[in-house]
Amino acid sequence: MIKLIFENASGSYKDYWAYKEVSKRWESDIDYFTDENTGEPGAYVAIWYNKKDNDLYAQFRIEKDADGLWVYDETDGDMLINDSIELDSDNGTIDDAIKSCFYYFHTRY
Image (tube, rainbow, N blue to C red; front, side, top):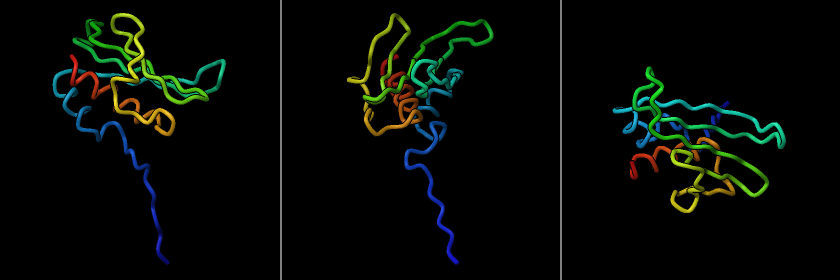
């Protein structure tokens, strides 16, 4: 008998090159959540200058709804960045959006 194992094609964000590059210099936190109103998943991505001192460098919010995934840069406001990242917002996963946050951070900060 042959057993086939299928892995999510997107893989874990921890395997993504941009996450590894950012992790060389900064700490990060990923907090998953479920929206109380819609029941849809989401996540916060925080990248720290100095986590011990609570010195936040950048923060992103990922939301999902019936129309797809939405990624916001909350660092200096609440800016939708879907047009600035490569993300299939209709078929992507939360991990895909997390990867996009690390790519965005790596290329812009």
